[in-house]
Image 1 (spheres, each protein chain N blue to C red):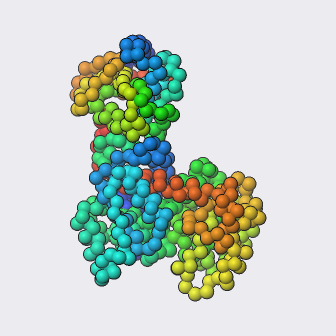
Image 2: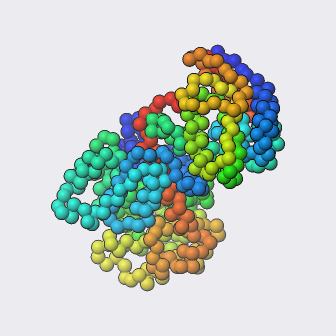
Image 3: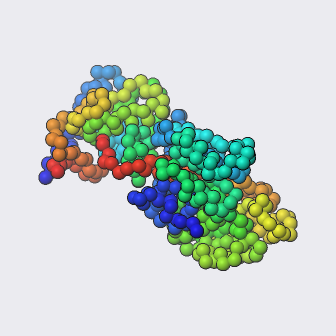
Length: 167
Length: 325
């Protein structure tokens, strides 16, 4: 059984909140970084909607995962690509689904290997709960209350489809 | 008798990396793809990934090496592993300690991986057969038998310049007889589907029945190099030669040394490779070694990424649990 969520309205929602957030914080030239794979798709859509001037960065956090020795390597992952200097810059970190928080921990570690950003704002398409680490999103399209046997998955990149599946 | 399946664990994943012989094309492709990812690590201001934090890797070099030992060490350090270099020349084996006793001692220090180079063919296999179950062995060159990580970095370098292996003509020139690099390359090139692998050298330096490995043999360099896409020059392995196999280095250079004239016989976009160390004026002319078609230093750089990929694959393999997001 699966149920679809309207990705477009979620993206509109996040775009509005992000604009407000940037204005409030007085951030003019943010750098956007999407986490492979789903987060990069979402980031690419947001990057377009916000009409950001800086190129989009993508992060592959496989080398920073805390469960690497348990799961081994993922094949066919794109390397990280941060085509800018992040030192002292405001960063918008984008992922599709916020769950345990471990991906975000890994992403922050990797980002800090590139330099010391002025700030990092976390934007996610959905927050499905189930956190194991102390992270929360600054901007979130929708909070989902999922049962243990449910999971949410983004497919894409064209079209982007978000589905809640019940096992 | 060397068991090839010793390289894999029960789930078919790479546990040791001892030879390219008999491995699958998907595995080679995976290693090359991973290496592409690791190549990006060096573009970061902090040239490190924390993948092998807490792992201990021992470099056991029974035979001299600078490039291979250094790149293994650097690759391990870039993966955040701790590295110990055992200097065999001054170690207890000189005092009469047996190889296996030395291994037991290193195991007792909770080492996770041995990188082994040895002058005897089969040494890395022997060690792999005798290590504790949690330890992996990587062959960094054994006698005239195999040098699989060198072959993989060569495949990586070739793929970056010529992505379609099934359309290539590759010429390996020189001392095939004593070259573990050539053997590992030939296996890898065949597995990747290269339709024309050539070995070129004097009769004394081409092993008998080498055509059974799936290569074409040439003794005239002018014929062998014609229309080649990739030229791999090999070093004359003086230290492994027994007896008078060559009249002189000068004559060898005249016949087989890669000069601009001979290079011109290959395709105009052919790349020139050499596993190093190069002997200028013996197997390769300086103009070619330093010329625009040479990718010799790229090979060294690529060696880092490829060795990172192999070490990470081998040590990051304990179970298949589901990924949490």
